[in-house]
Length: 308
Image (cartoon, rainbow, N blue to C red; front, side, top):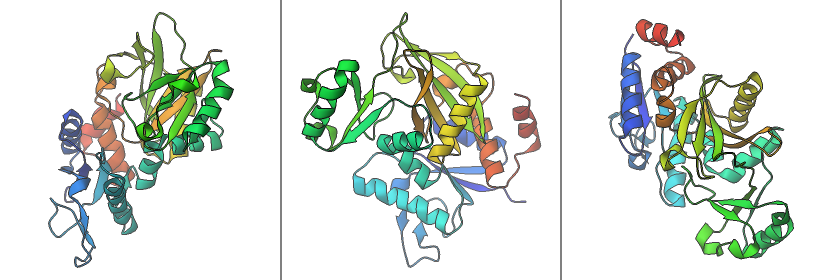
């Protein structure tokens, strides 16, 4: 059987892209990095799509590592390409719909709440006066966290203790996403990341930081975590609520010590987690992805990953 041809959607050819490409190679697949920004619709072609790196053909499947930043129109077009591929039978993981839910924090919070999962109270509004009204009502119970609706990696977060702390509407691109702050200071701050793939939590870590923003890229220290069965169940339900085949699920303990889900990331990084994981996360992702599209990994790799 010919090696499956995988389109590896990336933004930059970074450590994650190289790690995944090598893992797919070990699994017997050919992964070609592409940028969705370079893909296009072309209705004169048989498929109606143009994907550089694949000539007149299409890939056998698409692994979405990143869609890249851009204008609303540009990002919409990239997601349309993913929708189009899925519509003509090319497996796309994660799906465009899962990406749409997870990159939009309001949609994620809505999906988690609708699924009955514990998540901090959250409000998303489109005017400064509406945001001020929420802060006046809620800040007496503790601060709120203002997050960019489409932000990532801990950037742009701000604690809001009074309505005067709110930035102008143009500074938040027309949307205020406000969430109850639930962090606990105990010799620093901590939260947890659960990495879901193939219907399992394959790895987990605690992130510790002197600052309440506990992102590894911003200096938090990762520690391996053996999750409880209830946490595993919560993480799997959260990924399912977002429709994600693989995901990074972030949890935190509230003031009572109960875990709550903060976010679900459909394009999670794993460099920090790899520092404490005793196996190759990329190998596991490649194996699960190929199983998802009905292609078994090569024997040696499959045996190595199953021995985790």
